[in-house]
Length: 592
Image (cartoon, rainbow, N blue to C red):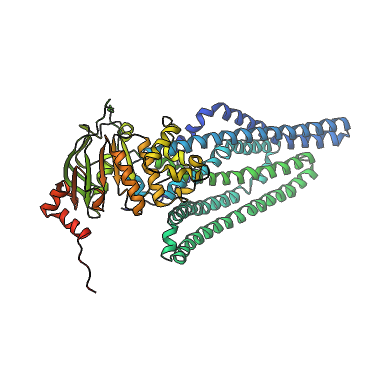
């Protein structure tokens, strides 16, 4: 099955995405309005300072008015303090609001990921999905905290400065604005190149995360087959490409800001050159010239900030497209209009002419039909790839069939409430997945109805109690990631305790004893006899010894149900089951 790579959007701005992102600000409209007011006040304080300077020079200093100069100095200092308070307020408000939005968005993405069918995870590496929930959501933080709202402040500051300069002296303002074409060209060059490098960086970050997740999880296999050097080289290639792209973007940043400073200096030099001559002629005052120099310094800062905000926008567009790509992926297993939840489930299972393919082309099951009555114990055998595990996947509605029906208690699983459906089943897999937390947490799995006494009873029933209490802390002892501190057999016993604690109507076993030693298998077989009482059982096995006493054995071959019956009947029929039996128990000894 093909793996979907990360899209790299080429657009720096997408109105549709931006409108959707702005909806996350709506619950915080009051805070956003307050931050906008703080930005306006901060910009106003910034704009007033050069005017205060001009008044102090032309009026108070020129006249020798010391009290008037003191008043202007006091007003200037008050504006500095006022601007500081306004800047502090808007930063605090926007940062706090941004964190609330990120919390909501992460929760929304994770909740949606839980609704997607397993087919989605077959095509999307876990590392890339982790990037969606972590790095991509973080990229939106800049948009909400220093993007959408602060752009308003930059635009107002820029407009205000231009108006103030034109009002103060339009000729000197045109001199200051003469470098605008050059600075706009530099800003365009910067945005174009940084946008492309940033797109590449985002894609490489996702590749790094996917590679790390896959190979750290499979580190035992890497070391077993001496693949450390090969995987190191592959990681180094991705890491090196990531480094080079970042260095390329650093080059653009390192060049852009000095260019802005040089252009600002050129503008200042032109103001001094022309302004000095006009001041000597009496066309303008010295105060106006000094105020223009201050406005000129403030004029180029918003332009540089807006160019930087463009990159924030690009980062947000790239991240938003990926995040919304996940959120807009509809669950392929739609909920029924009126979900059914039977009052007294009995555990009857029926496959009615089922055809199924994981990729909609190559069928894994072909016209499979069988019925399992409540309380019946059924084993499934067959060669690798014959469709045994697929039967369980369809029964739990991890996937939907292309043709036919899968029924539980006479109701199509597509009409069941999916939570109620899966609550009927207890599943024990060959590869047991344990979570971080205590042993009790891994048996209970957050189900409040399962108290400590029920956990202990379940563990005792499957012979897991002794090794649990032998650990420091007993049931409250913490497990390493994926239960690495436990043996395979101990993890398997915990999975049995977990299944039993939930008291399922139907017990599903998928190679549950294939990875344990003989002594543990004896314990598990004894535990199975306890667990099977009064339950429908469906057990997949390669070792025929584990299912010989089942009520019915189903034999699958290349996706078809070829034989069914009891063990002795199938052996006597001398068909596929007989051949499997011969291969396992009566294989002739090799010649010496």
